[in-house]
Image (cartoon, rainbow, N blue to C red):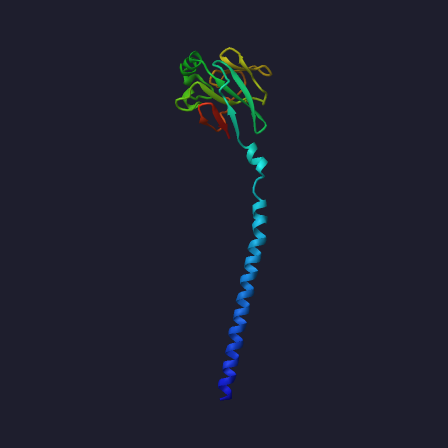
Length: 179
């Protein structure tokens, strides 16, 4: 009889011990998770950084033939409302003759050929080209003489590449989001 009582006491102690160990483990896991959440969330980018990653621009006041410059990620971005003549001229260029061959249609959004959005940094040494200047009716970099056409493609001078096109999308007929 005593053996049975001893066995029952040991089973009760064992099951109580298991319960306390499992409870303590569960509490420790919940505490570790609660402590880890703020640490992990602090590793993400700040809201200010996320806001600087994109910018919305109202394009309703840009008249045909005009270029407005906005800043995005510390870089000038040229937003140009091209005239039908500028579009026709850009589409008529023999791409095989270009240093950095790229069709005009690949530099604008489908159905929005009048809007050209480019990063306004010369691809030679990082100068800021002047709009509506140069031999090809686009941009001219006076520092070293690079000429870009109305599609932002390099046509003459030392620049090796076209003006870069940033990621952008039309969020309405009068607003674009860059970035």
